[in-house]
Length: 215
Length: 231
Image (cartoon, rainbow over all chains, first blue to last red; front, side, top):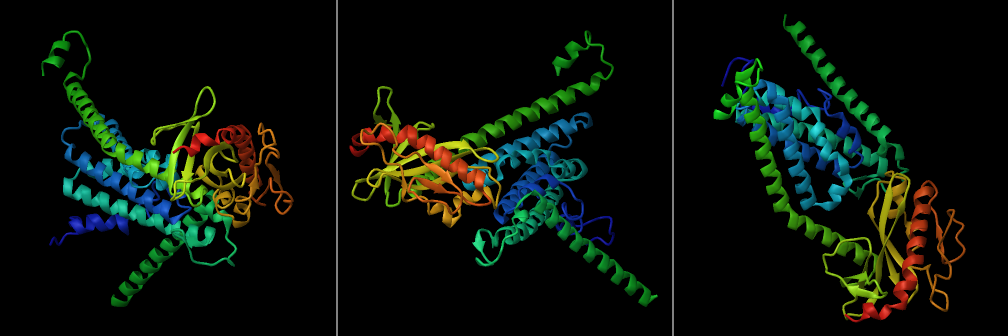
């Protein structure tokens, strides 16, 4: 389509949040839910999808209202919009599954203060069209959900020997209780960050080698 | 449009032209958001209530094995119990479970107390026939995952229930042997709760809240068993 890299396609807007600019593993945003609700895969996925929903909806709302909102009032209106969608998602989760709502507890309301959502509203949705903003929100939201799921699966597997409540490691596996506790969140996050940085470094080295070979 | 112009004469603010769009956007979006929240609340309210009732129903059936239908009762002021609406709320409710033939299986009662992190609420099943606590179901808990939450999963701990003795004294005025907590593996009598090593505080809290609730409720409900049988 476009030959310039500084004019990203719609697919790029969507994909950048999932991989290149993953909110958790690359940008390290929204760490509170990342550490707090990822002790089970189910809680992590629920939290990730709830955040993605709020992110998409707030991006659409901010983008469609962006000409109506003066610069001086942007933060207060963005927070108002985000808080509204968080309240809506709170009711929705209660309607879908009380058990999930019990598991996530106060962290649903705390989606409001997730800097990822306000960050995307301010940095992207307030400057771009509705479709692009929705795609950006969807990509970032799914990237966030994927990252939470990565942590949740690892922590639940090692901490309780199961994934999504299905026992995988059998009764003889001595569970590492610490992985279900707050420190386990840091351990799992550190492990994944290590993995992602190692991948990025390996790729950069390969690119440099390829360049050397061609020159 | 006339509102800001009428104010210009008395308010000596420098940035006059900028104020109206700010008011307009904040108030306008605030109204829209308020409306959206009301719509979401009204739309999900019946579903949420249904979920809560279904959750309670399931909890009652899980502590009264064999129960097919359930019914809520409330303690009357002058003693005795009266039927409450199926969707009644509150901590003073007693639930009766009936088997397929309409025979009373037992009662589900609520117990709550301080755990390790926060208040723990649970439902427990009581059998008139066995004079024992049949099972527990945690309704609300913030106990440590992997430690305190084992009161829901630890098979050794759950073995306490089913035969946990809460029989009353011959005159029926009190529980003959109040529930006691003992350390893991030291259980010798049917009214003792064998703790979980590694989750001592939560398992002791469970025993304590069951003792408090059973001492309060069991003599009361036992003396009025007929209130629950008349379906």
